[in-house]
Length: 162
Image (tube, rainbow, N blue to C red; front, side, top):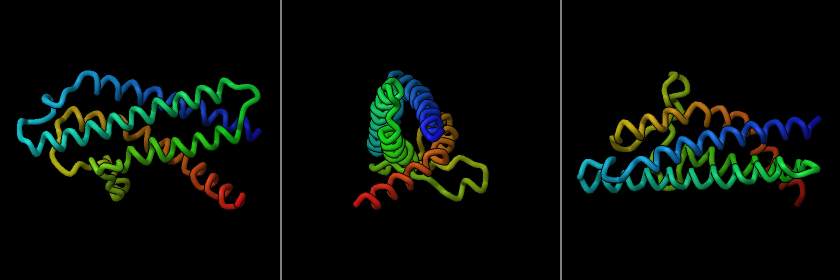
C-alpha cells in the first residue's frame, strides 16, 4: 500500500514538473533580456538575475522530471529511490522557486494569510515576469504542502541510519 501511495505521489509530481517545464520553456524561449529591461543598466542587471533563476529552475525541473520517469518506469518500483527523489524535488525545485539562491525574489510568508501571491520582487519587473510567476505559484504551493512530509521523513531516516 505504501508503495502505491509513493508511486501515485511521484506520478503527480512528474506531471507537475512537466507542466512547469512547458511554461518556463515557453517564457524563456520567447523572452529576451532587451524585452525585459528598460535600457537602464540597473534594470538590466536585475532582469539578468531573474532570468538566471528561471533558467536554473527549468534545469532542475527537467532533471528531476527525468528522474521521476526513470523510477516510474522501473520494475519493481524502487520506493527508497522515489522518496529520495521527492526529497530532492522539494529542495531543488520547490524551495528554489520560493527562495532562489541568487535572491532574485523572495517569499512574503504573510501573504498566505491575505490570499495574495507570496512571491515579491525587490524591484519593479515587467508584467510578463509577474504573470509567469503568478501562473506557477499556486501549483508550487500545492506541491510544497504535499512534499513537506518527504523532506522531514527523509531527514529522519538519514539521522536514524547514522
